[in-house]
Length: 364
Image (cartoon, rainbow, N blue to C red):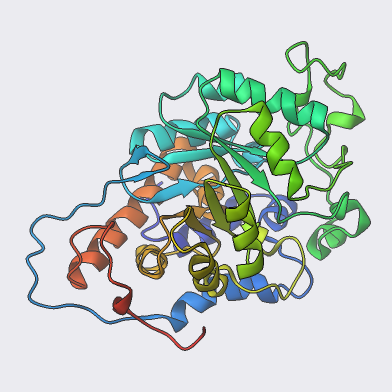
C-alpha cells in the first residue's frame, strides 16, 4: 500500500474496493430507502461551530473517564458482530487496536471469537453487549463476561423485533441473496463453557439462525441487576420518555442509537435525538452517541451537546478491511487528530469542559 487513506471517507472508498460486494452491502446497508442511514451522517453538516479565539491552546487535554475507566479520548468501538467479514482475526485485531490506542471497546454477543479469547488480548476496558435470547443464555453470557474482566454490560434495545432479518431482510441483502460466511458462527453459544449443548455447525448457532424468544421490557433491568454487579448501559434509546424510564430503573448509561439505521427506516438520526435524551436524563447517568461519526469535528459536536463519549461502527470495519489491526488504529488516530485540531481551533482545552454555546443549529 503506497499510503493509508487520509480520512474516513477514503477508508470507506478503499474498503468498498477490497471487500466482496455482498459483504460490503451487508455491512453498509440500512433499511428501506436508507433515509436514516444517510441522515445519521448528513445531520452533522447542519451543526456549525462558534469558535472562541485568543485562548491559550498550548496544553490540550483529551483524556477522560467513561463510567470510571480512563480513556485516551472519548471514542469507543461499538459492540458489533461479523468482524471476520473484513479480517481473519476479526475481534482480536479490533481489540488489539483499541488496547494500543487506549480506548474502550465493545464486544458483541455475535462475536466470531469467544468472550474468553477476546479478553486475553487486552487489559483495557471491555463492554459486553447482550441480545436478549433467553434468561438462561443471558445469564450464562453475563457471568462469563464478568468472570473474564469485562467492565460493563450493554443491553441492546434498538433491534426489538424477533427474527427481524428473516421476517424481512435488508433490501441489499435480498438482492444479493446474502448468506453468512461459514466463519461467522455465534461461538459464544458453542461448547462446554456455554453449557447449551450446541456444537459447531448446528443451525442454532449460525448468525441469524437463532432468534430472540423474549422481548426486553423495563422490568428485565431489575433481573439483570440481580445477576451482575457490573454497570448496565442501555443501547438504542432515542426519546425523552425512554430516557426518563431508564433513569427510573437506575441504568448507568444510555447509548443514543438507531442501530446504524439497520432496524427500520425514517427513525430520527442519532444526533437529533441526543438533546432530548440529555435533557431528560439531567445528569443522572452518562449518555453516549452512536451513529454517523465520520470526522473529529463530529465528536466535538456530540460532546458539546453533552454526550460523555461517542461510538463508531462501520468505520472500524473499513479499517479492518484495509489493513486489519493497523487499519483500525489508523482510523482511531485520524479521528483523534481531527478532534484535537477542532478543539484547538475552537479554543477548547479540555474535552470535559466543552461549552454548549459552541454550537449553532436549527433542529431541536
